Length: 226
Length: 119
Image (cartoon, rainbow over all chains, first blue to last red; front, side, top):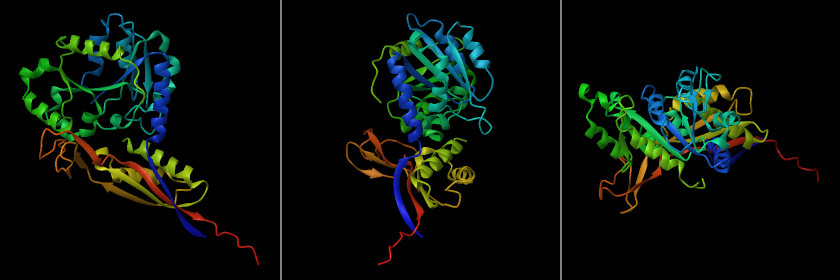
């Protein structure tokens, strides 16, 4: 008996990335652009979608709701008469803290992709894990709300670097908080120089049209090979 | 919490490459930028490896510090803070030279001694 070293040098998430590419091919075939929406719990993902999705013009949007448990968020989106599919991650080891490519793949049969232009995947609320797992999306956006404090980009650099847009939500609360918007932007610029931001209040509607315009722009993008 | 998913992926990959042989050493590189808890990863790998070829493997987890490179001046450095700007020619555009790894580097497996045919 002797020992042999086998060189592997393979990314631990290769299997996930392979499934993400398969998802992406399905989305491309159906001409659907996909947005991966990420944030901490309670940052306002569902509230922003409720505010934005009712009025996307010609863009036919659908939503895939990722939650550890329950269908509270999907029920809220369904009121908008938008196709919505609930994906629960709770069947695993206490419930997965993120969506991965395979979970999204398992939900695809429930979605009529041919009737959509844009699919928004609302990830599980979490500032660490979702950033690790590609799902076959075209764009990754995160919401950071002003109640979370200015230091979050420095604490969760992976998440803030993984997105192409940062929506700063709950700005209606700014007069009541010590939140320093300039300091937040300074921290964000340190971890992800040049990333665009949007100031939004999903509650009052301020800035929501800008977010809608971004969604329309993503829906109109050409497929880019992954 | 995503360490469980990552541990499962690591053990699956090592098991596939082991092709039925017992794994003695499992070497994994974890970059500082990945926000993976090494202790937690070690704990979960121990659980998911049970009753498989990796069950008795010694886990060698090496942590790779974050290392940045400036695309403009070519300098490389290890930042103390998560600041992705060149300290020399800011706001030079910066790329990650190291620290994004999350990879199975190698495994060491037990081979049956080759049968030497009698002369």
